[in-house]
Image (cartoon, rainbow over the protein chains, first blue to last red):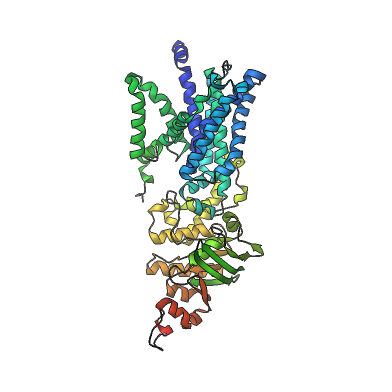
Length: 287
Length: 262
């Protein structure tokens, strides 16, 4: 067991990051699976991180309750902004959610009395362990896999393919969209809350545009055909920088190249690719 | 019974429909014909709620449809197919039908936390019904294929099955026979007749005159956004205004006869 201890000492942050990033990837999977291009997940992550962090620092709220509220607050915010913004589609929706993300970042930056502003929030108790992260990831994955196979999942796929036809089949498309948006926000918030409690320190810039793009990259890389795609995407985007450590300054370059290759040759993500390789009978030429 | 009263629709300065009044009876097959661009599909889009009329009202079984959300109109018992096919191409046939099926008002996430066995029961029951609908349109053997792999005519039949899955009382068919071969058309005619016998009310837009004249009890004719005629197929065939709309006016008096209409 000694190797395990030394492994954990070295890589605990990485392992926990994999967990929270998979949660983030699952949060964007929900909206991508509905065909919605939203980039607000970084902001929801920040809302969750600050909510939970402030609660545990200032009020000594039990960790579980703080996590719960870290998911609930972004969900409520998503519920409020979702109604007007989800009327938009395509790049317009992306722009609106991007703008919302900036608003959140700037509010956190300027609410110095509460959040510490640009100096960030220091001394968050390190309460997140592998157990919390693993339970959060596996419970979420279980629910999302059930969701994907249920009529809700079918409705999501239908909306992605043809919104008008779906609406005319009697499905309330707007409420489905709101549901995935709010659910995604809650997951991103939970990931943020978990993340804040092992990094000790958070600052507004962690939840800006770059993080938003990173989350989107996880979703696109893995593919939105199945929650497993998000898991793969989250894993790869977290682990690649570590595996490519030898490349030094060229690391971001490789990251970019991989994304371009995926978008060019497997636009539906890695998961779809593996499905076609492993189950050739399900390709269109079957029967 | 569906009633359109004084319906007008314009897009900016373009007048697409002008003062159209129409009653689709509770039973039977009703045809809507007219040259290209006459506004037929716009009528369907107004009924199904994709468009809101500029003037006039649409009443359906005592309810006002104009302004109602499209999904509510479907739930109130009006289903449609599309002129430009809109099946879910990346889904299997059975999934296509399942999307449209069941009581959507009970859709909620809490069902996911149901014990797995009950969850599967519900799914299996729904799948059985979906399979029956597919076999009705002759696609049961392809249930597990992706809809995008079907031929044009097969996709139209899948759309019909999907529309039926919403359990409609009124079915709107937008050029259901387009792209079908003679055999497929015959099958479709038989199926529409059977649907009619089961008590459904059916409103069809179609260019194939043999199809329309053979099936419909009543036909209405649109031309440039106006209703120019209404009656039985025989009356329509003999109506000089209809003949003119389709074939143009002949300069020599007396030579334009209804016999030219197929």
